[in-house]
Image (cartoon, rainbow, N blue to C red; front, side, top):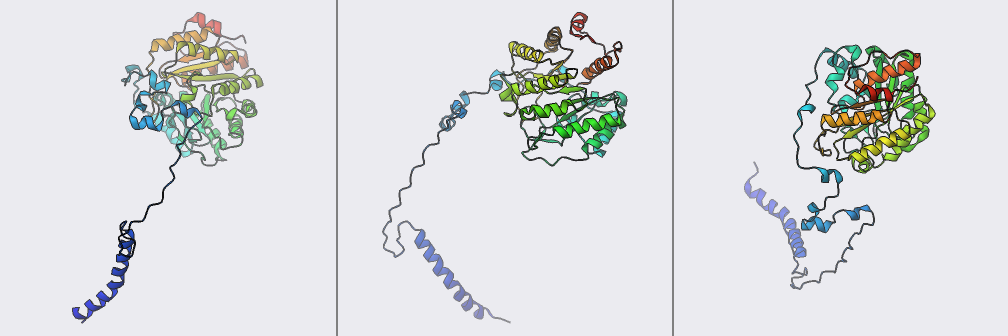
Length: 407
C-alpha cells in the first residue's frame, strides 16, 4: 500500500511548474505591472474610431439606429397596413367555421398521404377544408399543390414553408397526381404550386406535364392551374397555357399600392397582370382567373382600379375573400370586411363584364362554388348546349345576363 508520505512530495513536485506559469500569466494580465515588477503602466495604443454606416437606399426612409436608442422609432410607423389598423379585433361570427370531419374528409386525406401529395388546403390552412373535402366524394374538391410544399418566396400573408433551395422535383409527381385525380372521380380539379425561383423554367414544364398526364388518364376532367409568375418570363406562361388546361389562374392578391408590403418583392403587380394577359393572348378561349384578399387596408378606389386593369387584359373570373392571419408570425388583419361589402364587390365586378365572381368572407381562389359555375360555362362552350342548373345564388339576374358571353 502506498502511504500518504510518499504521494505528497511527488504531488508538490508536479504542482510547482503550474504555479510558476500561473504567476507569469497574472503578471502579464496586470495593467499596472510591466512583467518585471517595476509597476510602470504601458500606454494603450489608440484605436481608430469606426465610421458611421450610411445607407443610401430606401432604408433611409425608416427609423435609424439612433431613433431606436432614443425610443423615437415607435412613433415612426412606415407600414401602411399597420398604420391602417385600429387595435386588435375579435373574429366576427361569420368567419367561424366547424371543425373538419366526415368519411369523405378522412378518405381524401388518406389518398393524399398515400400518394405523397401536398394540398394547399392544408398548407395554407384554408378555412373551407371541411366544406370542400366533406360531403359526397364526387362533390369533394381538393386543391393539390405541386412541386413540393416549400416555396422560394416569403409573402407576408402566406403560411407555406419557405426556403431558398427546396428539395428537387419529384419526377413521379405528374403520374401520381393524375392517378389520384382519376381515382377520386372528380369532374373539376384545381392544381396550384409553390414558387420555384430556383428552377430555370420556374417549374412550367413540370406543371404542363402534369396537366397532360391528367388529360390522358381522364380526358373528361376539367383542369384549373393556379400558377406563379415565373419571374415575369412570359415564355413559361405560354408553355403552361398550351398544356391543355381549361382555366389559367394567377392571383393578384391585393391592390397595386399594397403589393410591395403584402407580397414578396419579386412578385409585382404589373408582372402578375402581364402573366394573365399573355395566357389570354396565347389561347383567347382560355378562361383566366384571379383572386384578391380584402381586409388589408385597401380603399374602394384602389379595388376599382384593379378591376379595371383586369378587364383591360380580358380576365374572366375574379374572387374576393377575407384575409385571415394564419399565424402570429404573419401580418395582422387591418379590418374584417362585412358580408354586405362582399356582395357589393360581387355585383360591381359582374356589371363590369366578368364571366363569374365569387365574393364572400370565406371565399378562396379555388372555392368550389366558383368551380361549379365555371365548369358549366366551359362545358357549354365546348358542346354548344344550354347551361346546366347551377348553384343557387342571390346574384342579380340582370347583372348575370350582362356578364354572360356569347357562345
